Length: 472
Image (tube, rainbow, N blue to C red; front, side):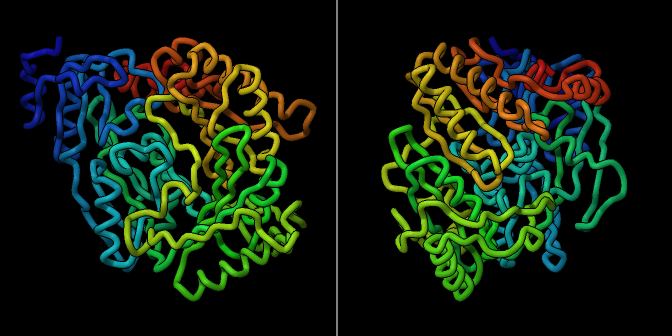
């Protein structure tokens, strides 16, 4: 049963503290109290009080990603960021915005749109309750299709304010894009799942909001030809904003989609050139003339197998109005009859070198056949990120076996190769019965180093204990 008496220390530190209810459970773990600070100072006082009381703390934004990762080992206090909801400063001339962690991405997009700008983060497929909050997106380092061109949250974050577990406030970065002073806390906290401290404020670089956005999509019969299309699109000089893949089942064709954005004349011209590129099967400029968001060169493909017949099979073009009619481009490209992720099923997130795309797709299907799992596959193929969705009704033991065999297959990709594979498979979310059969994080490189970082920031292990890899 939830606690009914609020400790004096918590009440004195934060004006909004209540006993937790059934809706405040975190991945099935019962919470004791819920507190909602309205400022960094109030959050600092709250965490200092929690430290004195020895309380385990879990941060919560919209709650759309609380089921990701492991359930916490315990949860005495939920810190709700709903009152940290202010846009502190929008320096439109500098393309920079400073916001509190509880600001919803949808609301931020509406504010920035008035100046013709945007934060180039969109929700990944399967996101619930809207796009989520700034703090939640940073904590999980999650991004949707736009990550191909603009990167993940850690790539757009230029400043951050956090509260350590002992209540001490720490800041890193600033309000200029080229900021190299001090330790980059933002990159450390991005993807930390709330295990190092509480994010209260963030500063992002912005980009102009495009006037028009258009998806071009086509179907391919096999992983090799789909991968060739992805490589050709990615290496083209036509500046796609997203390169997505959608493979709803083993017996279905693979859909490849590209998002083009800009002013109307530019998008119209680039759309025509993109269709022509696919028909001719040529890739365009040398790799040195195009780079990914991390600065690495894009290596072109000289030809696109099977797309030189003069017709692009399954060609679909949809002007989705993402720039003018809504805050984000479509979370998934238009594709008739294709599967969609299930929040109550299992999602396995696979990361890999883009050059391994065809092999990774085959590896996923091989693991599926061995375990009787026909998963839906989709995501930012051009950025080396795919989500694999398994329906909730599939036997949990089969899902666990599938995940284990998939990891083994990905680990074998680099066998005998000169360059080690970086492919990984993390279970983003899954029903409790699946979690009991397999480690959701799987093998994690540098786990010893990660434990050391956790010990430095949170020596008592009170921030979301056990939620991260290795029980961190």
